[in-house]
Amino acid sequence: MSDPAAPVLSVRDLVTRIGGNAVVDGVSFDVAPGEVVALVGESGSGKSLTALSVMGLLPAAARAAAGSVRLEGEELLSAPERRLRRIRGQSLSMIFQEPVASLNPLMRVGEQVAESLVVHGRAGRAEAQARAVEMLARVGIPDPAARARQYPAELSGGMCQRVMIACALISEPRLLIADEPTTALDVTIQAQILTLMKRLRADFGTAILIITHDMGVVADIADRVCVMYGGRIVETGTAEEIFARPSHPYTRLLLSTIPRLSGARKELLRSIEGSVPDVSDWPEGCRFRSRCPLAQEDCAQVPPHVPVAGQPGHTAACLHLERIGEMT
Amino acid sequence: MSAAAQGLRERLTGRRRGPGSRAVLPFLAIFAAFVLIALLAPLIAPNDPNSQNLMGRLKAPGVTARNITYWLGSDELGRDLVSRLIWGARISLSVAVLSVALSGVVGTVLGMAAATARGWVETVIMRLVDVFLSIPAVLLAIITVAVLGPGFTNVVIVLALTRWPRYARVAYGQTLSVANMPYVRLARFMGASMPRILFIHILPNIIGAITVVATLEFGLMVLFEAGLSFLGLGVQPPTASWGAMLSVGRNYVGSAWWISAFPGLCLFLLVLSVNLIGDHLRDRLDPKSR
Image 1: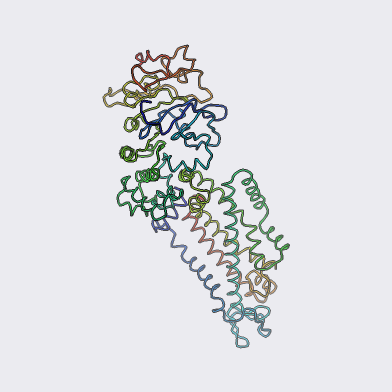
Image 2: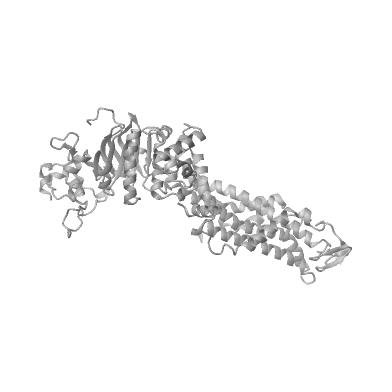
């Protein structure tokens, strides 16, 4: 990529299999220091499995079969579990979708925030507690000292997500993986959490890999976007580029499903015809051709990523980029 | 959040007192009275429970013989029933407490181990649980006592041996469900060690359900001890045990009903109060299992 600094996370040709099916099929992307990259796609596009492969948290049935995942140059896929354990909670953190369920209901909030420091022996009890309180203040929790002594049930959902973020960032990780971090929250809280994540990214210089299906979230926070379909990245580029010039037919359709305030009033909400086919029914070649309005005979070949005219770093995997204008 | 945890929180913070929480108070009082009597037995028993008085055999309640007033009558050897009942409470409660503690700890550890280790460890432990649960507990207890011999310690061991599978099964199921909660997955992801996950993240969240099993088992343990003693396989004479007293009284039930009636009444009151307290705790701590 154009960024001169070495990437924090570098994923190359990752293949993750469940049974005989490659549900993640040759995914490559980089996350630069301090950058926010969004993995976007529908359910079944492989975005969550990509994230789980990176974290080494795949369900028992799935296996990262090929490719490489490097965090600051260190290969994670072949790393022993003990090494992974040190990496996680130090240079790699994550936040889950369900903030309330992600907190132990019988553990005080402060202790949970301090946990990764205590577990890795990087601070004594008292110091860890003090830093937890400080961290709670930084994620915008009022009266942090009192809150630290409370239990999660005494906090609201948005507050719990702030606590989760505090848990994830207290170890000052290089990379934060956020799996649908705002899905369970209502819209105003979503906006607050995204604002908070942007601010903390600036404060800590933490790179963020965010997994989402919500284009609103992408527009709000992401520097770069990887659009996934059928286990592959079909288009990647800066967020501005993707929104201004979506070049893959799938991206185009995905963006056209966002309701607009300016549209005709009586217009029905747009949707993409059909649904993501089951992994065993994925077509040969371009995976999107079964739903693509521009599909032709030659789409049965796997389309390579080609640069979109004149835009560095913006590529799309489609053989018919020049016909994108035919879509409405 | 698990319902058990929520229940515990409500109990701790005193919020949302459910209806009917008053109804359990009299039974709590009865249970507390039994506990006090058992603890203070040497101080409050009017007579030596084992001192025989052949002139005062089979006296009816309220009768005085040889300067001793038998408020609840005397047995076939002229021993004071009040004193024997008081000392019997000690036996009943201590057997129940010890066997519940022992089986609870063993069962919980094995259940958590099975749920954590999976694989062949899980198979061995849980199939063993199935085997133990498929044998009638009383039969198993009788056979084991027959092998080990009767006596206080052996009764406790036998009861623990027959009852741990109940706890193991609950601990196993609860651990499996809690282990899949995002906070446990997250703790594991963050590099927390296995003991830390088990004791800090899982155990506190399953202890509510195990407590419910323990209280319900407690009443059963009181009955089991009485049953074994009734059969002569429990605590040995002359030590006072309600079950043994019932058994002796059976021979005189036509002429001296009080010998078996009062131990029976004590058993009834104790077990009833424990079970009602257990039901109440279950509603509070683990409403789902209703």
